[in-house]
Length: 89
Image (tube, rainbow, N blue to C red; front, side, top):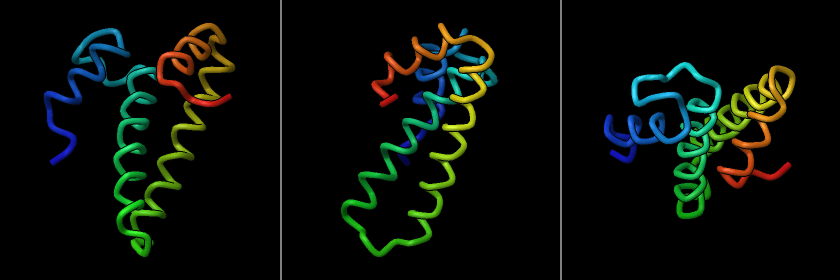
């Protein structure tokens, strides 16, 4: 499995406030980005997997809404997470 407990803790420790802080916007955005990257690689090999494609589109929408929230809440945190994860925009 690509997303183990250790990987999640590492993502939250690096981007969130701590390894157990799964509620921060930055941690969730980083987790969604990790999952999006994994699904993108899967879809490159399995082009006709439409259920995964739909899940990918939903995840991108969730990440976008969290980024929009962060833009309204604190623009500096938004800019930091976008730069750190290498997201466009």
